[in-house]
Image (cartoon, rainbow, N blue to C red):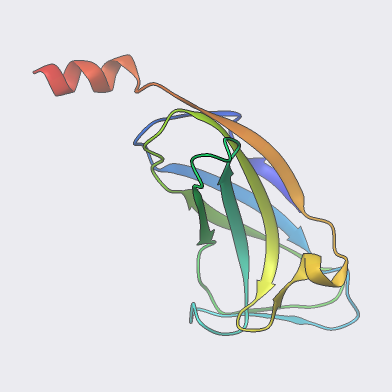
Length: 130
């Protein structure tokens, strides 16, 4: 999994667009689906680094129908949801076969990183005042 767009710093209360390239390294084709409850999708897990907060959430990449043959890659867009608390968050990106398992459970590597959620942008604060 390659991050094509994944900022290290995002802003509180803002949805953040992200983009990844995933490559099928298996011997079987992947069946991506426009149905969010079946077949395969890009999955993103977000956890607060502060264990006291207990915050965790999951999001999926865009839904579309496509078969990804072995050795082929596909670019998938997604969005990190608006996070309401500033701080550092762990972000894990993986493929998931819905209702079956995350690929990491079979030993596939994930993309793991951290993002910093910073105060709202100055422009947003000015709009809120007006």
